[in-house]
Image (cartoon, rainbow, N blue to C red):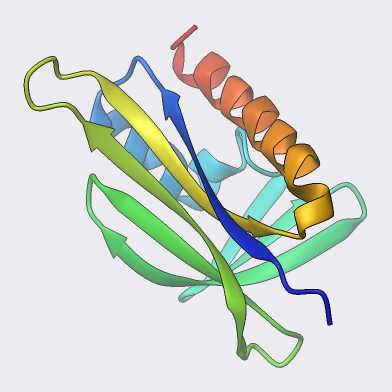
Length: 130
């Protein structure tokens, strides 16, 4: 079986951490930039793109700082893969960035990175950070 590799990308974003957190932690915020639609029931979030959907469990969150979603299978059992969104704020400059942690197959790493770049670009447009 071809395992996925973990990767991280950091994106500078002109936003307050509080505003940014609303867009990475709520179904309504996520549906404005991450997926076509996002539904939640308890700790489970369903991400819908065109004709496909994926389900994840909100594995952890720290208000104003980060969220971690662990992908689940059809029986709502955790898989080994997740994605995490961390808001980083430089103590001196107060510059804000979003650190994305995700997994992809080695041969799809470039494509996965490009997808995140496009999604973060959408996020920046939504929050007026362009």
